[in-house]
Length: 556
Image 1 (cartoon, one colour):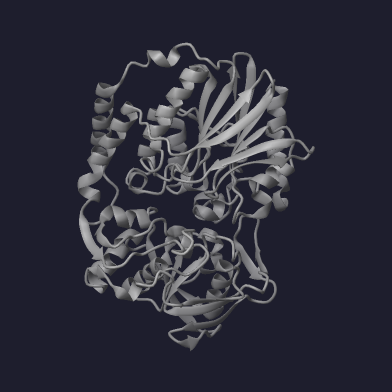
Image 2 (cartoon, one colour):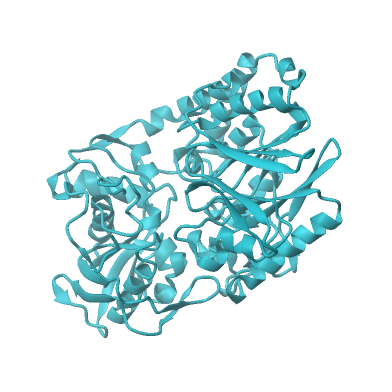
């Protein structure tokens, strides 16, 4: 069985079943509208980077239950639910429905506002806009997503909500990293010209000016408070586009609800005028529910991260059960097995390693690319490896969760110099996390972390040149030193080879030997079932990999 998207008829049948079951399970909601002991305060519940983790952590059913509790406590009209991006991608439910099932789930939960994260665009710009404009019952906002051909904003920059006379403006901000952390060609015309902008120019100045203009407009319209919802992040993010940088270079924002970097934090950052701005993010996959409370009578703003909440709202719970049951027969099929735990994390710390260091899962994925495609070198970007693979049976769902994007495999001819530049770009952020960090097969290399990165990129994040010493050295292909003038064959997916994902444009105009063949997740199944005989064995036992990547002067 090939891994392909489910037909519209099957999707409709599953959704119809979910809707009928939730209608039967719906409880009396009249209590939600009863007297609220803390009426007058404004509550903003927020999520970010759920990545299809609909039942992980608190889960959507837990979120719906907690929202109902807050409505009882503060009043139904005083509770607003927002999402800071990367909700519709990251698991089988997203992959098999192009994100539609996640929008349906967010409708069911009762979201009011969302913004696009970079991964909202992973199924294409047109697909996202169709979901945002025709499927979502909530409002997608973004102040800095610009259609360059029309010279207009693609989405509303902000939305004003009236809470019994107190006006709160919600301003959406998407990361300019969206270009390289989704698929760059989605934002270009056929000639390769960018036809969309995220106000990425001038080392952050364009972004700050855009946000400031939206904040000023909302204030002029009568906003008493401005809550920015950003998919910006902190750790491992381009410094000029971090949430803290946006706050520090603007004024008039009271709260910035954040996403993108998968961190959990509540902190205060000073704005351009030296005033405190609350900055909060919940982590990823429902590590917590974010809660911000504004008291208009005092001006106080407080926040908390609600963790370990174990209640479930029955309607949403049944809705999710129906969705998962409809896919279970397909996704639960066992296709292979593993004798070892394949990981994206550092077993010593539990922290994500796949974006800054070698792992056995990264090695296996790169091996699969090289072996099945018949190339000399396999490149796998760390950001494209989205889940671990524990020892035991391997199902279709396990494979989709590792590679949820459904990228298509390619083989390209590349010079040794282009390969060296690609490795340098991948190592440019070390020791910080970087989705473009390269796992390799058929090749070994060394990163000297004491050498500052001199990689130059465009405002959109595309590679331009290395303007100084290389921190990548001792590159060997098949045990032999890399020859900058020699031509090699490189296997990876269309995201990296053809589309310039993570800024890898050095391959985009090269000769393609194989162009968009099988899906990356199908290739993993073929590698395990055929090349490995159906079992991932002891050759991948070391969680730190086989030593293909050596790091000198590594960060402690």
